[in-house]
Length: 245
Image (cartoon, rainbow, N blue to C red; front, side, top):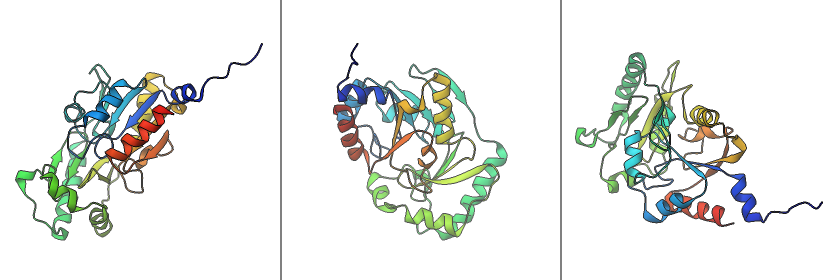
């Protein structure tokens, strides 16, 4: 009896049955809706799609144009399955919130901009707090040029380290610092979803723009295979090549 040799393209599809993605600067422009070519590519992909973001789940839904996918909002601390059923939700404690707000206050004298309330610089999302000196909802053109290489935010964290027994501060999105739980981050929550669904880690791959020290995708490294992307356009190109191999 001879062995059956499958075409390489079939082997690739079998190798990755579950595709995990960051949201901002990965499948969509930062804080902007997904573009139609990416939406169509993900919608038609035969694999499971998982979006892992610091955003709220309803914001993930809006930004992804209601793409049918698992949503791991707030770095996975609020999880919905592909039909919208809640899997878990673990908010911060009041003590953790107080630690974060004290740190944000300590950073403010070092900022090169004045906080503008109308741009929503501090967002308490329940399971994480996000601080953007330029403003989380500032105009895109302002956000694009504020800190494109993350150096301003990394410098702030170097000058005023965030010290907490249970929380971390990581670089998030294009202008923000995300305050997240040490033991409940993208890495642990990706692993949690894989276990919950009975998937195998070797069947999974994660795409993100923050796969560097201090980046908000760093914790996925070592959990499943990862691919660094520059932005949503690079992600589209890499994903297209992967699916068409």
